[in-house]
Length: 480
Image (cartoon, rainbow, N blue to C red; front, side, top):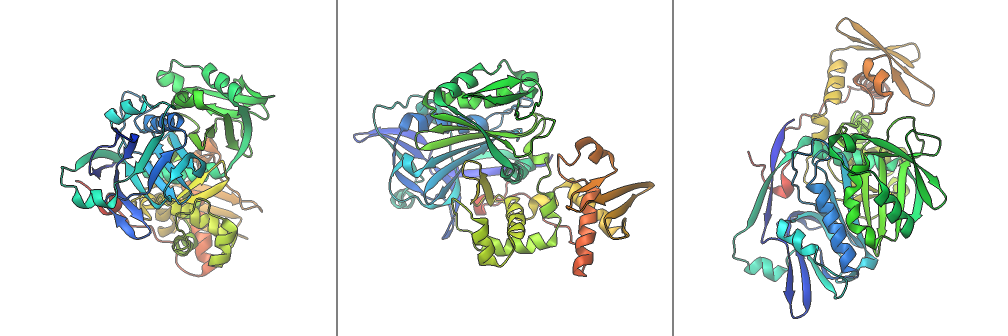
């Protein structure tokens, strides 16, 4: 797996500072995208946290996930969380090093008291002294929060810049792309009041290690609580690796409720799920991949959108209409762009591969952020997509009859792809037999789709994106 060095440059370390006005939480920023363009150290908010103790605990939970590997835990990860200012809230996001857990803290307007919330995306420094200071934050006094230095600090600062260089796997980018596709297929499956939420989460098996994190359980709503079961009975929601919810333990004493999200149409095997703790003025959500050994980066949910040339063109159009909205309304975008809602969703999926789109399960809506990745990078690095392009280029695909059946010839092997009236495709290959579409389409299905699109448009099949190189964080050159 290729890796690049992701470079952060902060004016100073983030810290909890004390002065006559009380404690101040100063979160330093590094390289950000804003409505006015790239900024080295943007400032998105200055004011007070309405509930300091739960906010500090929730920030620590997001940092816990960023520093964790739930699969092969002996290898540590260290990526600074991403923060997006959406005008009415601040969103803090992180991924585990194994890409199997996605954490997001939404600090809503009710949880903030201060200046207007800005718009943009950046990284924030989380260091060990800051973590220790956050554990000592109590509810007794107000806590001032600053996300980024003010203009005077930037212009007069003459101290050394704090730099971090960390390995950034390609799969971390693909994980951001896949989680928004996965979460968009979730429904609210259960909601527990505070006391039952705490009781349930504290009852989960621990002990962990690699084997514990890989154990899949299921839970069934039973009155005001959840009843565990060892198999996917009707109505059950998968809890794939209960150890991976460990970060929620930090916020349990502040919890108001627990909401559980899962696929709208549950299957008969392990599945991803999202676990949201409702806090005063905030929401903390952990989204788990179907298995600790399966990072979101390999799920393949974005491949259908990546394989079509129409989605690429539509994404360029939709991208100019985005402005860090906290809620992206598909119907409104369809009206503004002149596209159908289905094409808008495909365009949003494609934009998600560059880190520009996330999905909020609590509001069942997409949101805009701007991560420092090149559009098309996830496409260029995806082996199934590259293999599908190679099949099309080699002329390996033949459509039979009305096009519902296709033959794909690979060396001396012949695979057949059949598409039903609803557009769902199946293949005779081993990949499809193993996953049944549960990890996205196989290379043969992708290739057939490309040929059908080419024939329908009368043009050439979509060309593979040749993007390569390392993602550069917010205008910075990648470090060799």
